[in-house]
Image (tube, rainbow, N blue to C red; front, top):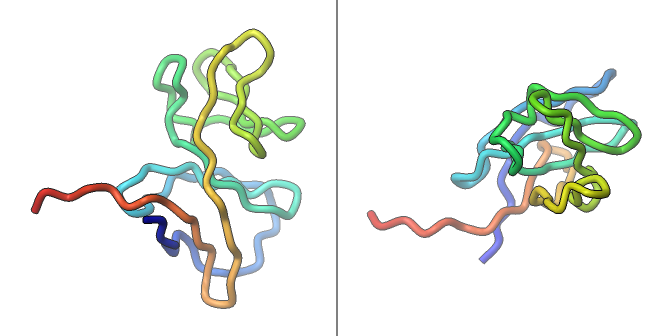
Length: 108
């Protein structure tokens, strides 16, 4: 069952940013670029690079290790990569920035 998790305060953001956040047990890369928030997987599936250390270009998030590219909209890798990253819905509300994730099973 999906749930909305608050990952940031709602405050004016003046420049592009990429940071790693936790949402319901998921490590997520929260990206703000061109006046919009995106939420995607925090790890590159190619070599496990931390995507929060990367940068954005032309609507893509670039991995800092081998420069693999992933669409912020769809998560799809660039042509020829054959991989993708997960994307998560984002809502900006009066009380913060929220990301929708599926609950992870907890044993205890």
